[in-house]
Amino acid sequence: MASSATTDAGGEEHHLTIQNIRVQKLPHLLHTHPSLRSHPNPLDANPFFHPSSEFYITPSDVVLRHILHGVSDSPEPRLAYHRAGPRKTVYFDPGHVRAAIVTCGGLCPGMNTVIRELVVGLWDLYGARHIFGVAAGYRGFYSGEPVALNPKMVHDWHRKGGTVLETSRGGFDLHRIVDGIQDRGFNQVYIIGGDGTMRGMVEIFNEIQRRELNIAVAGIPKTVDNDVGIIDRSFGFQTAVEMAQQAISAAHTEAESAVNGIGLVKLMGRSTGHIALHATLSSRDVDCCLIPETDFYLEGRGGLLEFLDARLKENGHAVVVVAEGAGQDVIPRSDVAHVEEKDESGNPVFLDVGGWLKSELKKWWARDHVADELFTVKYIDPTYMIRAVPANATDNLYCTLVAHSAIHGAMAGYTGFVSGPINGNYAYIPVEEVARAKNPVDTRDHKWAWVRSLTNQPDFENR
Ligand SMILES: Nc1ncnc2c1ncn2[C@@H]1O[C@H](COP(=O)(O)OP(=O)(O)O)[C@@H](O)[C@H]1O
Ligand SMILES: O=P(O)(O)OC[C@H]1O[C@](O)(COP(=O)(O)O)[C@@H](O)[C@@H]1O
Ligand SMILES: [Mg+2]
Image (cartoon, rainbow, N blue to C red; front, top):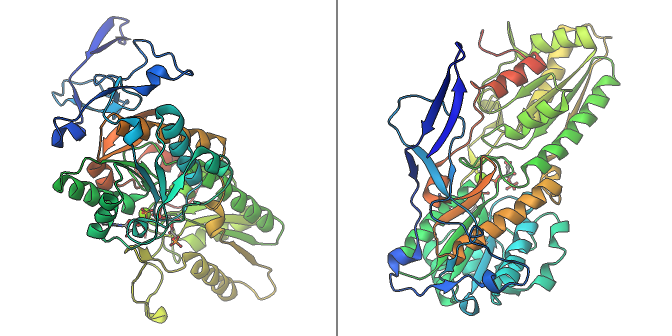
């Protein structure tokens, strides 16, 4: 129960009492193995820790899902998740831990830091000595041999972009994966990946439960696009935004240095425009930001071309940022003879909105302007450059906290959970929920209005 005081317009103070919290249930190994032996947390004997009575997290420590709350008479309980962190009791004898770590899906800055911190955390905090890296994504559980890892091997991995373990798309063969986990005697499985990976993790967790195996499965969300819901954001996202800004800055310089110059930047963002939005907000050089969550059109009143024409007349240059998933319905498909392509994981492979926009802009200028009027489009597509880099300082810290949170949760016997920050605090969230939760840009909230007011771009609703 929490209480606080507010003052109304008449100056009268009201004390508000906030209660009625529903804590989201988490699967625990005891649910399937009630006779599991508990152990005191090895941190009790760790010379670097002096656990006091408040040191360990208890089941009543929770993180609220929403901290912005309109106080009302609503009888609806407020949702909360178990707070991440070390528990007084663990359900693994450190000598018997056999941990597997796997990375799946596309790259994201910080993946190597997460792996490093899983290894170092398991080794140093809990005294585990059998830690293995599974190569090249989910398929690594049934093809190839896992590699034994130790702190010495991984000590400088946080300085490297990518994933030393390698990653892949596709190859999700549930029974072979769980057979591989079972045959190799893994009892803790750490899965680092995005929305697709989390959907796969749900199936793995369910199959492990069906087989009544005593294996803790922990997920660590990785998504450069920020398309996984509930968590504040993924590790690596801020680093990617910083890299994206460099591309915008170059586009701005090119555009500004030309007569009627347009700088066009395409950024990653398959179904969500978070990278484009955040890079636009922080760069301030952008005149128009196009994201998958809103439609746009080129010709006519309120269209992109009319807007750019006015911008060029006013400023002599303009910068357009487009997320890769934007405009897929505007690009004509007939002349590309396009059959919707999918990658190995079943994700759509998009038409190149940047290349198409560049050619449309050139056609427009040639059609609607006199021949000797100069015009330049400089198109920058940084693609993998924004994600194939090591994490920045903030993201590296995040990687450490999220990895250690996952270890504490698995050692405490939780399973089928994902660790991640909610409102700045690390929590354990059931993986089913994470796998369902999407995270589109909310174009009705103040952040998108802020983009529009900053850029002055049309809302493309006046057609
Ligand atoms: N619905 C699903 N069920 C089971 N496995 C899935 C599902 N979607 C994706 N996967 C698997 O998860 C892994 C990563 O998925 P992918 O979409 O490529 O990347 P990400 O996890 O980064 O979104 C791949 O091995 C893919 O086969
Ligand atoms: O790595 P690939 O297969 O070329 O795919 C590129 C895609 O991967 C991403 O970088 C990340 O997507 P995931 O996090 O879902 O793997 C997308 O932004 C981009 O569309
Ligand atoms: Mg994905």
